[in-house]
Length: 247
Image (cartoon, rainbow, N blue to C red; front, side, top):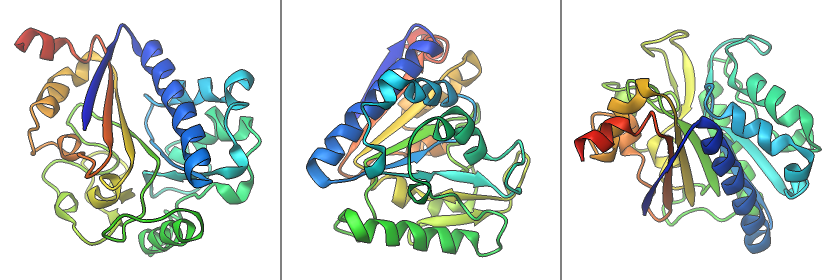
């Protein structure tokens, strides 16, 4: 199922994403005893993370039962300004009471980091949460952003990683923007999720979002189609402007 929610501005997108996070966390803990979430990199989700870290909101999440992963990571050392996990830590994870063992950072500087992270994902799910019928772990929520070229996570247009059908996590060394080397979830893992939230803000992304809504398979974000879950696209007015003009 796909739903598209349009908001006046990026602050409203952040509010809605934070609300979705809190509600899905409560539902997952209530129904399955744990909440598995994959955070997105880039600038768009950071406002959402800061909202979640606010005491009145964070107190509604059972952090002891929350397992945090990252949908992609740049292959740069910890502490580097390009690291997605460091940005998420500054905006959210360092501000809440979550056990360190519940935060699963990507060993992105290791040559076998993708293989190790896939094993970590599978191992964590084997403890608490059932997998899909195909044996793929099912995240309760995967946050994604989108670039102006339609890429999401570190899956870029025209790259072989888009067609990966077996591996759940890949290392890519041909990203068209720096740094070229990254570790990323693949589409089989993303599309196994119970809920995927795609956050899109800014007029520079309007053309790509219009193509995503038309399911243009040339764009990685358009291939995000949860098999038996829900895709929620949360976009601001600037990002949906082209789609409105076309319709």
